Image 1 (tube, rainbow, N blue to C red):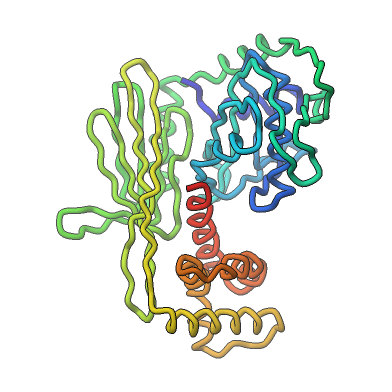
Image 2 (image 1 turned 90 degrees about the vertical axis):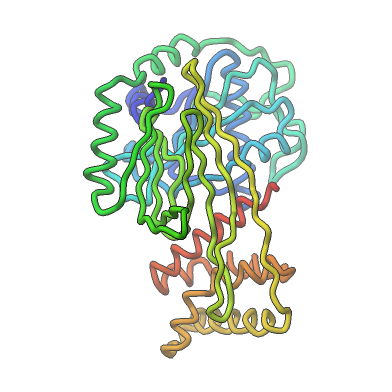
Length: 378
C-alpha cells in the first residue's frame, strides 16, 4: 500500500519534471483552455509510459518545489472527461493528499495515470488542439508527435523504485491517526475504524443527533494508510455508516428560500474493502433538485443580479443587503436548477467579487461550484 504523501515527496525529490511526472501550481477544468491543457498532459504522459504509472502533482510551485496546496477537489466523474475527449483513454485517479503544513482546507492533488500500452490521441478538437493529435513527453514538456511514433519503455524501473520507497508502514499509520485526532481536529468529534486489519479510516466533524441518525458538519474523512483525504467540506453535512466491509458517506446540501430550508441528499460514496489489500470506491449522485415557484425565483434572481452589480460598481451595501449577499451563491444554484440557464454563468462571473466581499461567502461559492461540477457529467 502506497503512502501518497511520501510518494509526492519522492517524486519532487527525484528530479525536475520528466517523462513520467509533471507538476502544476493548479489546474482549471472550468474553461476549454484549462481542459485542453490537462488532456494534453494526460495524453502525453500516457503515451510516454506504456508499462508504468505516471503522475501529475498539483499545488506545487514550478521553480521552487514549494508545496502551496489547492482546494479539495472531489469530482468523481473526471474519468468521464478523459473518456469523452481521448481515444484509448488511460484510467486515471485524482486524489487529495493531506500535508500537515497546509491549512485545513488545502491539499496537494495527485493524478495517477495508469499504464496504458495503446497510443492515446485526441478524439476531437478542443481549444487550439486538433482531433487526432498525439502528444509525447519531451523531457518536461508535452509535445505533439507524428502518428508513426515508436514508444520505448524507459521509465518502468525508475517509477517502480520510487513507488517501492513510498510503501506505508505501521509508524506512518500511527503517526497519521495521532496527527488527525489530536492535532488537526482536536476541537471536533473524531473517530476511526480499522477494516480488514489493514485499512484505517479516520473522520472528524461537529456531530449532532437527529432521531436515531448522527449527522456531521465541518467534515474531514481520511484514509490514513495512503494519506488520502476522501471527503472535506467546511459547510455541508454528511451521514456516515459502516460495517466490517464498507464505509458509506451520504452528503447533504442545505437549500431553501425565505427561511424555509431542507437537507437534500446529494451524493453517496461507498468504499468497499477487500481481504487482498485492495479497496474500491463507488460514487452515485442521488440529488433530486428542489423545485420552487417561478414568480418567487424571478424576484430572487433579479435581486441577486442587483447585488452583484452593486459590488461591481463598488456601491456600499446596507445591512439587509449584506445579509442577503450571503445567500447569493445558493440562490443562483437554486435558480439554475429551476431552468434559469444564465444563473450558472452569472455565478461564475461573480467569483472575484464574492471573494473580495467576504471569506465566508467565498466558501459558499466554492461549495456551490462543487455541487455544479458533480452534476455536470451526470
